[in-house]
Image 1 (tube, rainbow, N blue to C red):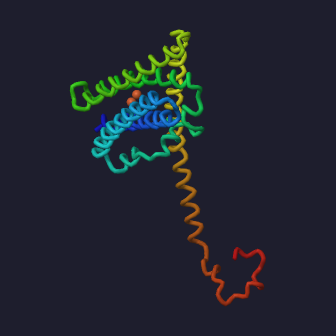
Image 2: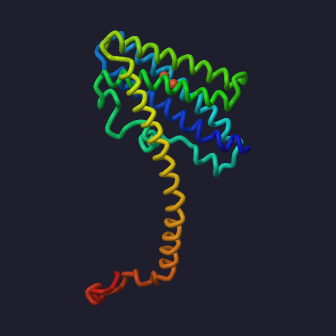
Amino acid sequence: MKNIQSELPIFYETAHAELASALEMLAACKETDAPKQALGYFMHAKDEYMHAKCFFKMLSQRGMKVSLEKARKFRFTPPSLIIKGYISNKGFLVDTMKLKNFIAFVYTNELLAKSSFENILNLVGSDTDEGKIISSIMMDELRHHGMAKKYFLNHYPALQPWQLLMYRLRETLQNKGRKFYDANLKFLDRILTPLYKGMAFLAGSMARKLNLNEFQRLGKNLMEISPNSIL
Ligand SMILES: [Fe+2]
Ligand SMILES: [Fe+2]
C-alpha cells in the first residue's frame, strides 16, 4: 500500500505532462501551413494522447486501491494543466516561441521524457504488463526525439551540439522549477487549509448568534429604522 501511495503522484504528474504534450502538438499542427509538417505534428499528438491515456489508466488502477479521500486528490481536472505549469497561461509554445526554439524544445524534452520513464519502468518492473507498455512509450519518445533532431539539423545545420546541450540544461532546470512550485503549493495548502477552516468556523459561530428576526421587514416602517441598523 505504501508503494501505491508514493506511485500515485508519479503517474498523476506524468499523465499531465503527456496530455500537455498532446495539446502542444495539436496546436503546432493547427499553426503550420506545410501539410507534411502538419501530418508529423498530428501523428505526434496522437502518440502523446495514447501515452496520456495509458498513464491515466495506470493512475486509476492505483486510485481504486486507496481510500476515497486519498484518490480524490489525484482526480484529473483540465485546469490543473495550467495551474501546474504544464501549459503556460500565456498560450501554447508554438505561439510564444520562435520555431527554432520550439523544435529544440521538442528535441530536448523527448529525450528527458524517455529518461524519466526509465525511473517509472524500474518502479513497475520491466517484465510486467505495465512495464511493456512503458517500454513501448519510451520507443515512441525516442522516435519523436529522432524526428525533431532530423528536422532541426536539416533547417539549422549551423547549430552546434553544445547549443542543444544548453537547451537541454534549460529544460531540466525548468522541470525542477515546476516540481519546486508544486511542492510549495502543497506546503501552502497544508498551512492555509486549517486557517480557512478556522475562519469558516468563526463566521459560522457568529452567524448562529445573530437574531434573524431583525431581518424581518414585513409590517415595518423602514423610514423609522435607525441609520445604524444592519437592515
Ligand atoms: Fe509521450
Ligand atoms: Fe513524445
